[in-house]
Image 1 (tube, helix red, strand yellow):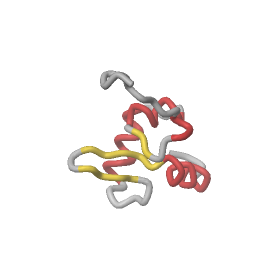
Image 2 (cartoon, helix red, strand yellow):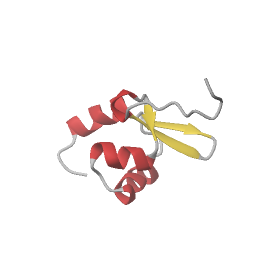
Image 3 (cartoon, helix red, strand yellow):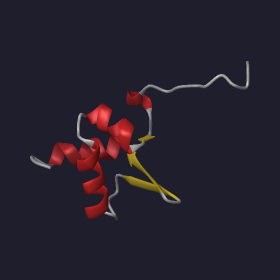
Image 4 (spheres, one colour):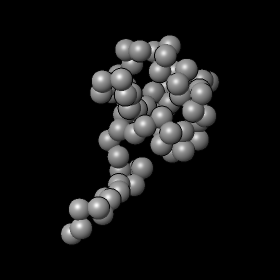
Length: 70
């Protein structure tokens, strides 16, 4: 396999995703997702890696199932 070949994982199979990926997957605007991150810094659905914040797909799905409005 060539070292420059990029492996990809479908969004539906990813454990965690970037804000940009989550916006596409959940059909929620990036600004709204960034607002949720800023206002819920200790949320279980967030994964922090240094300055980078990822959204744990399954836990965020559970969160969305519980709320009626964001």
